[in-house]
Length: 470
Image (cartoon, rainbow, N blue to C red; front, side, top):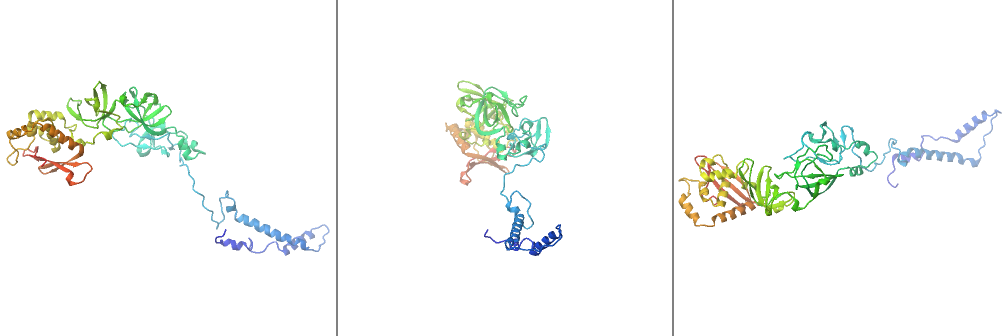
């Protein structure tokens, strides 16, 4: 120890006591009292031989060593935790500790990670963000109901996930080792296909599977395992994932092969009908379920209630993969569910402005695109603004001019397909003028923008301006 000496170090040089003890006078006094108590009662003369002078010195040294050992016992013996005042005990190195279970009835560890649900009676978390409850730390049980427990963020999970007596399992076990032994294991995702239709379970071994039906050929993504059960992710036919746990027996799934898949993505647009019989478009990239197979065509379901047919070559197996193979298209280019192709078809037959009342500029824009792609120039002309204040030619002039372009419909389709592929849309309205602004994807340059103009007529109906993209 070459560092600076503490204050008590110098004091210890003169001994542990403020005055000298066990002196020669003390020794003489002790021996005199011993002699007086002898049977003869005679006082013997004290004779100090030189060879015995070392005894008191030795005694003093031993006493000093004992005192020093007593003073330093907080540092010499690590097991002693209470030190004398003035002695600073060096800090112990930090050690990993296990989060305490304050109350085993209120706090518990889980068997593994799980997605929570909004309520104890719900088996679906459709359309909401997933809430993953991690099993890396204990959760507080806020309430219990119908076989569910309420945990963090007032969400619910099946009571099956509670790791019973986890506080006892923690005794004498390091946290990392304890967490490795959780029975539900996260795995690197891989794909499987449902062999035969079945309802899924909310947890392994559920008495009566309460999840919705997974149809034969559905593609699932495995994310967790427990004994002979697999937890998988499934995707709705509207492109959203189910945000709860989906457990199925391992034996009910088979190895993923694209030829066995009955769920996937649409490569190109397809026409379908909804539950009311109206005709609608199903756009590129939409998730679909194949209901029936033939040599070249598939019957499919999309968005739960749309039914249609497509060529086999337009089907991309596996909704979890392959989206990069589908062109990114802004859905605003297409008809919405509320404004369907059937409405357009009714207008194309009568071409009366009354059927356009209440439509937004972007709706008229879609009508114009579809009519031009079909080569229905009479309907295109019916969508144009009319009146002396505008430069729109007469119907006869327009039809004569378009008749000189035999491939006008093909050119229009190529033009709109190219714009759909690379441009996104938004609508701007300023008074009686409106613009459908087309912006090249990923670009902020004004040079990569195009605009399609519309004008509101005196009847309050939006019509297409003459030469709308000039």
